[in-house]
Length: 261
Image (cartoon, rainbow, N blue to C red; front, side, top):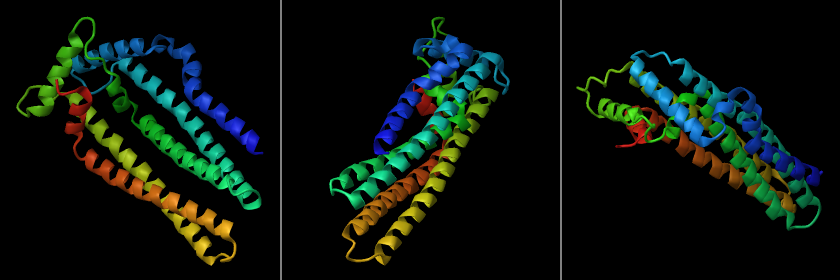
């Protein structure tokens, strides 16, 4: 059982790395390298900024759709990874209870991997929900024709000078709204996971305290799981608070993404 789960985990990790590109290549083959993707994004972004409308142009819409599908695939694979790691964690803890003590270390590592997989799932859900913002860090410094550098300069002016004619740009208004939504989504995800892990921690501590005091291994298992989930809940509380604060400063964040010039 454990060997099968380890093989399944390795296969899912490989799928996480390789599957999005393989599945999307027939439809989005033009973006099959970082250079091509960045160049296409730079040109599409210039077109959007110069359009003077809030609606995304066709080329940028295609890129957003590509990034959405890329991370939607990763959401599905991440969810499967959480399930596999959770099953592996359960199997290892059960083996620890019935066999040698050293299984505790492996089971603890598997528990931590499950928590990390949950984090990866949360990030990919966030990107899938607001793919436009997640694309912005991929913008190159400039395009071959130099137009992107000028656009980014105009954006910085619009973000830092309220009297600038670029401050009221429809594209800038959309981007600020998307950045704000991006962090509210992260806040909602982390808050949900915080509640779940907090309840799980309370459950483990309750089981530990209500168990047979002579069952040392059972108490150790519940203690370890209680500590890991409690620490995870505390970390998620910080992420939730930080996301809420970041959502209130979209201009500062957008300026950080495109660079200070």
